[in-house]
Image (tube, rainbow, N blue to C red; front, side, top):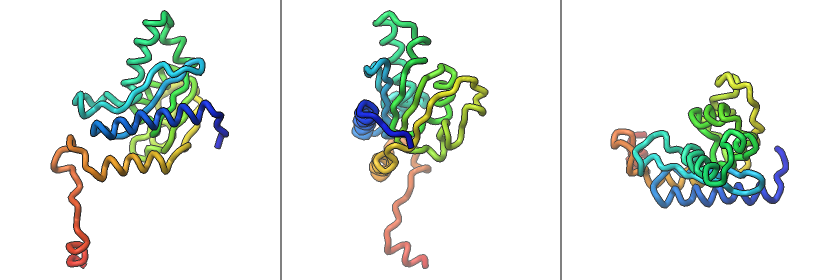
Length: 179
């Protein structure tokens, strides 16, 4: 694993702060920040449940914020993103990863793999997106911390999840009676 500098650690911690905020708002706890020239220029957390928009993943929310930052600071978005690092608590999904490849992001550091939907290493890859651009990827930097947040969220049940998809808690007694 690549050694992290103090800024990397600070920015990854900041992404986790954003993810913790998502938990408070009953959103899947994924948080991210975009850093350009050593400065945080955008952050995002999942906002799917509140907006009822399945594309409002942390990365997409932050990309919109970055676009506004570029306009306000008179920078070309396409130039900025090529020199920007993404710090994110969980490996971006296929949708987000594909967008980041095609936007030609410079670097991604993430906390834990997303084995079901991960678009960088777990399920998707640069080759699958036919992307010529190579993103420097630094994976699995805080696996236990990211998993702890996800467990915290899913243990309290997602109130926006359809009833038929919710896990039914089975008591120890009923499990024993089945045996």
